[in-house]
Length: 274
Image 1: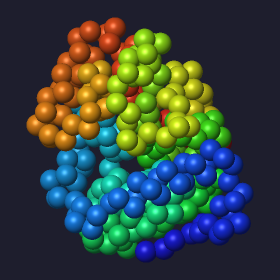
Image 2 (image 1 turned 180 degrees about the horizontal axis):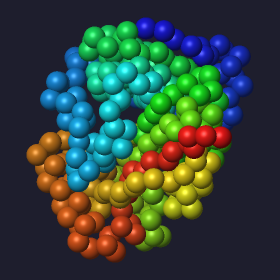
Image 3 (image 1 turned 90 degrees about the vertical axis):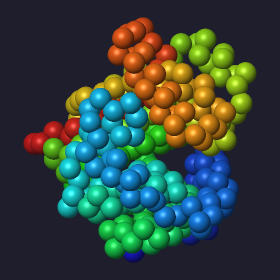
């Protein structure tokens, strides 16, 4: 496994306050990962190979938008602890796994080795808006829940640079929704993965990101009831499946629910000719 963009102590000190807080937060989360959680079941990989357009799960829909990635170069932007990296690599992609957290990249390395996909993974230690990747390198970029931690516009510009002409970026991001949604969230338990600096995206920011990458493509809203249940760290796969299916039904049959749904999953494509 290769690694590029290693941070020195001087580099860490040069990060702005927000970036350094994010790095330290995700370093703490990565320290809690145990070795017995590294191997990913085959069924959990296969569900992302050809997910249908109608899937009730947002990440499955993101993989639907990515399409066939076998043999393609895919940037896993904000790879975290490597869960998506392992799926991408197991499905045949050459993965550039990018994260600002050095400890998260260590976990990604361990997880890739545990799942025998480390030969297909290159670790890139960098801020999302300052990718250490050459221009016109990537066929796809997967950006799952990272834009709301960084500068969305600066990151979108960098994504456009690293994508090949005609390349596609797929995003899964939390949305702001109406003010009353924020008021309810204030009284719910804190999301354990949340950071003090993260900010859900507005629809205007989504449109700007797509414009800066190229052009906006297919999109779907997810999450109505699950926005509440996520705060209670529900782990039952059966219960989660039922909730996601309920949300899919609500969003399909009651269009008004999209106004306070989150996340939004969408694609943006870099022009084929520039």
